Amino acid sequence: MKYKIGVSLLLLSLFTGIIQASEKLSSDTTIMNYSAFKRSVAINGLMQTRYVYSLTDNVNINGVHFDDDNTSISHNTNSFLMRRVRVNTRATINDHFDAAVLINLAEFSGNTTNRVLENAFIRYHKSKSFNIMAGQFRPFFGPEDMLPADIIKSLDYSNQYNLFSNSGWQSFQIGVAVYGDLNTDGKLPFHYYAGAYNGNNRNQPLDNDDRKNYYGRLEADLAKNVRIGINAAQGSWTDQKGHAWGGDISAIMPLAKCFKFELISEYKEGTNFAEFAAAPAAEKRAVGDYYNRGFYVFPNFRYECNMPRLRSIEFSSRYEYLQENYKVNDNLRQTVTPMVSFEFADDYYARIEVGCMIDMFKHDIANTAQYSHNTGVVQLQVRF
Image (cartoon, rainbow, N blue to C red; front, top):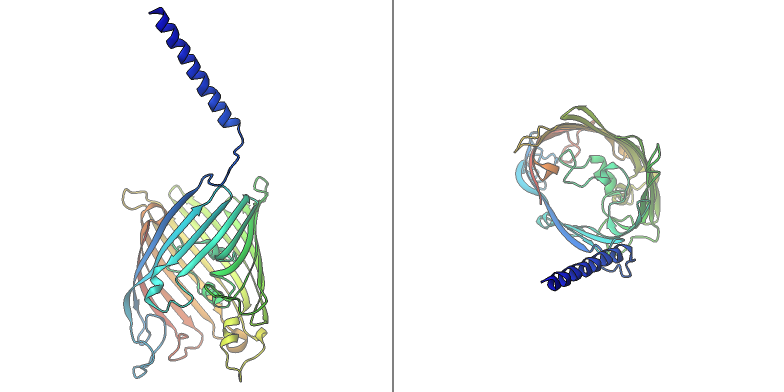
């Protein structure tokens, strides 16, 4: 019996020693092959469905005015529609490389030319201060480029964002970018972004000229929840040169235990390549005459009620001041978008938004989209 007990104790000691040695070896040994280190694949999605109703007589749901006898313009004043049906796949190759593909299946409801595919990029992460991205993505040219569509506090991106996207300054482009965070432990942390891209928008087989668009952006954290940013870019459209620049500020201010105020405001101006390209040859002017400028102020009040089924309520009202092509044909556009949002699952995994878009033009032009109108919208969103 004593022999058996002694052998058992000896074996237990040897086993314990082997485990301790193995643990020490694992913690001290350098990994010799990072090929699949931290490899993983994640798939998620977003659905946004809407009911849109024109609140202005003789204006359709796209904001285009029509005369009763004009059959070339849609007379549809209300509709259910799918705004976004996105599927996002993100693959971590190892601790330095990852890739992402984002598609919007809702684009199949219309003309799919140069659409559907949104993000398709590869990233290399060296450190917090240096990262490289290549492929199709949104250049970092303002705060809206940092916000995915599922967490913006309004129905959609600003009119300014869409206008500058048409000329290749924003939205999905094909190119390369570097970015990172610097001085993160100092009194004034800041972030940098720089890159080059084709500039003729997404899903194009080739660039439309030999020049590239170049941009840079700097952000500084003035306080814990206050950030300012500046950005500038130069580019071309079929060998015609142009530029764009802007500045912005964003802030989050707690007002009470469950109540906070959020603000984003941005000014931007730049060459309107899209209008230059669309102008008839007989009327075309110098590219520098086609120019946009505008700003918006976007306050959002968030009340976190934290009830079992209702997590928060948000009230926002974005105001936009936009001068499109103001050197050639100035027609000031002002837009107010009041919204109320009910969040039923944290991080906007389920929410309902109700609001309207109030568009006011300095000059109303019949049978065009430059016509003052109001549009009501109810949107249901689910992330998964």
